[in-house]
Image (cartoon, one colour):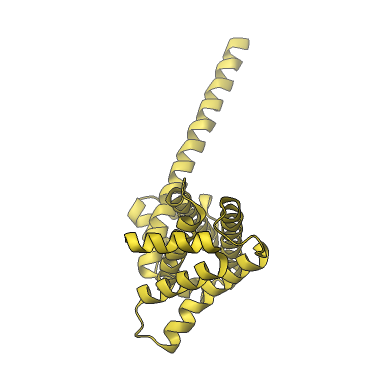
Length: 223
């Protein structure tokens, strides 16, 4: 009897573990599919049926994982944020502060350009609460990234020691979020590359000391 009970426990433990793994895998498939479709067609244009039909499972299964479409939207945003964060980490790993800063700015500008999509339009219009939380989280990540970069640059001797790290980081975040859009609204024919290079030059001159500015100029000459 004892052996039979142990077998039942083992069986149910295995079954629960298998089901959990299956649902985790299914969850990732849903998120990946939805992320690609939302980016291409917008959130409103993609229904739960579209996702279920592509992955070939029932809506009942879908709602076991995501009770509401809003839950899926949140999961997609978390997935996309993790991808961007991982990309940032790989891009400026083992780089000095200045090289890392330039990469950060270029990447953020690229994402600012990509933000002009039906996905972001739908997110802001139809899911304002989720949008606001997402933007706050995104801003906080950018601020923390800049603050870490400024500390690193000061330690390396490339940035001014008298910098107000917190205010400088906030300034960068605000400018990156607004300047690109504002300049294009004022002068839509100006190339994105020109705006990015101007912004990098402005920020670099604001935060670097003589050593840092000389390093940047040497790198420009190499390019």
